[in-house]
Image (tube, rainbow, N blue to C red; front, side, top):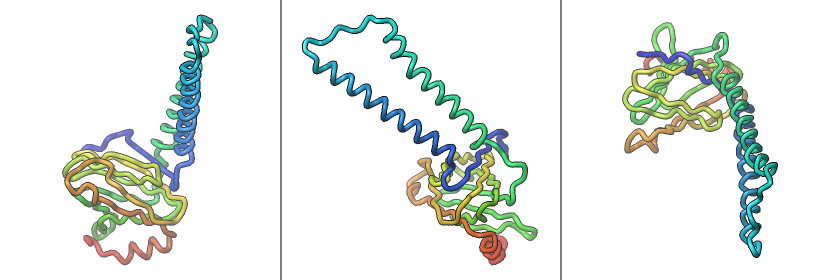
Length: 211
């Protein structure tokens, strides 16, 4: 099994403020740019006779430079978020969980002294704790996606990718396969249950190794 160095993704549920801020900024700028361009296009189309293209160099430079500067700023901002908030690994996780995708189920393993405790499609996490997720696939490429966590990562056969999750509020959230993996792809769903440390410990103690 190959472990891919550097493919580390962390997320604070729900959702990651840095990722959400970047997303909504891009959406807002895209809407604003679309509105400005459409207004100018309609204005030009309705003019009679049509105005001649402007030959003023300052306007042409501004027209090209403004979106270039905005895009460059977004690239830098996204790179900072990607490096600091999404692919940064904590010093030490509070627990380690192995997840392998298989047509059409998520097998979730909790290591224990007498063997792994296995659940199907049910990921339990203690609130506020950092969980290391070792993600892989047993057959084809699957897409491990928790929309509310802003986490999406491919699960590839023969490779293990490490994710770090730190849910900051209790609740139940969806796990979705975001990769077309077969005829029952639509049914490959799981759930994240974020609960208090006491409830998590009680649930884990109730599970038998290999079940």
